[in-house]
Image 1 (tube, one colour):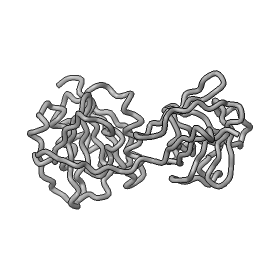
Image 2: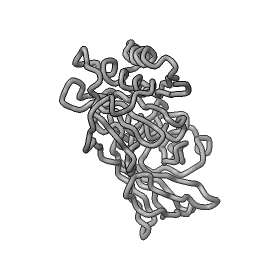
Image 3: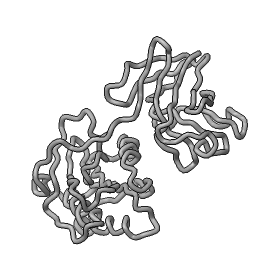
Length: 277
């Protein structure tokens, strides 16, 4: 099937052959499929970051993309191997919550427990189960021929995010640091207006949208620090902290020509507030 895309995400890294072997298995089954490496540098076992990364890339993917996502600390246990279809995309991976953010709020989801292939190992289901199932989907195999219907998929908690109109503040948390040491937070989606910032939550069930004036707007960090809200790094002196709206519309914390992760004492789960004085 031409123009079928399989997008791979894993915590395998690139030093070993694991990611390449998965691609080879998909290509053997569906040689016309086009393979996209999203990342293989998810921290080992970090299902939450993997779920966020899938949410992050989804708006930019071609229609019909098959997401082959393998961050699987429960490999070899009773956790179920899944193949999932929804309007415009499919997913293959473990039933550990990795697809939580992609599937939230959807009523068009069909899922099966993969049974059409059997593993030859207990530790490499990416090669033995998930890649073959993704290849079968890419080759046009109907979902119902890949496995038996699955219900009650595992979900992970959404990150903290709440807005308070009375105090004109939004509360969230640090999610993770990117390779530059910038901290991605759960606060957003944010849109910069002429003299204000509009907050509209991306977390299901979040508070109503808020408009926060730029005058007096500040970001409060987990250990009592603060950061000004600016457009980009160069608006503060070298070595100074800043907050800005990142490319995904979420609030990010950085240090100009430095690492917020290394110098601000922030870790996943640290409390972050966007507040007006």
